[in-house]
Length: 106
Image 1 (tube, rainbow, N blue to C red):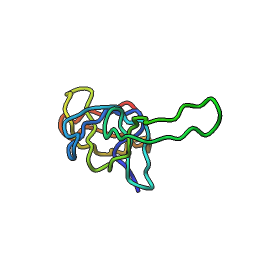
Image 2 (image 1 turned 180 degrees about the vertical axis):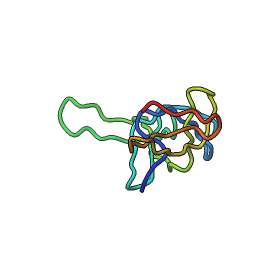
Image 3 (image 1 turned 120 degrees about the vertical axis):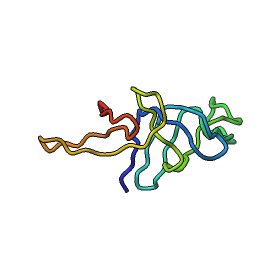
C-alpha cells in the first residue's frame, strides 16, 4: 500500500483522541497502513526485567495510528494539507501540497 507520509515528515493528527496534535513521523509501516508519530498516542506498557540489572516497571511509548488519520504539514504554508504526486520531465516523482501547489524537497 502506498502511503502519503514518510519517516521524518511533520504531520498533524486530524482524527482520534489526539486530534490537533503535531509531531514527526518516527516509523512508517506501509504494509499495515500505520505510522508512529512522536508525542501522539502515548500508551503505558508494563515491562518485566528480562535480565539482572534491567529495571522493570511501567514505560510510556508511542503506539501506531492509522495513516489516514494524519496529514502532512506543508513547510511553505504551514497548514495540514493533502499531498499529490507529480511526474517530472526526467521521470522522477515528487510530492506536492494541494493547497499551495508547492513541491516538497524529499
